View 1 (cartoon, rainbow, N blue to C red):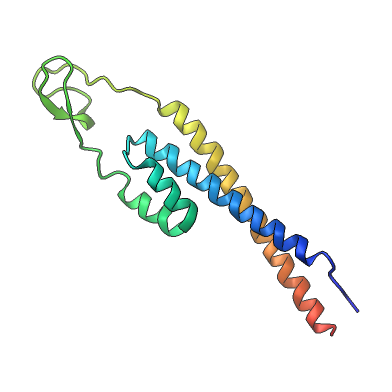
View 2 (cartoon, helix red, strand yellow):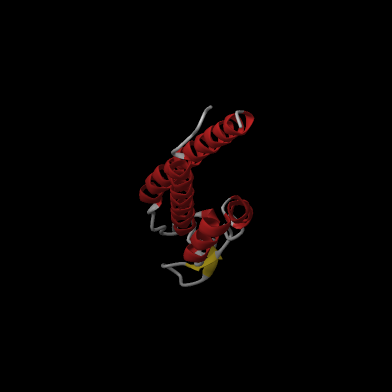
Length: 139
């Protein structure tokens, strides 16, 4: 008779991988929101950590809605669209504090880790299901 004695270990490992996936997915969303200059970056990270794919989809839908945000020109002190890259009044360039390279690297690392942990968790779940069905068939 086939018996799978470490079933509890695999359940525990699966839970840990799921938690790690949530944390890394939340961090990836956090740094993406910071790169997009979203004021609610921490809220999006927490929501994505708890609700995973549903919150991620909602975030990806609304993340670019502030692209045409108005900023104050450093030269003439008038409002202008940030997406143009220059002031429509005085034609001076809009100074953009570019942290995108740093954020993109962090996003790539955390998103990759989230995917790796998700795939590992999926493999363990499949392994557990197969072991359980073999165990039940041999009873």
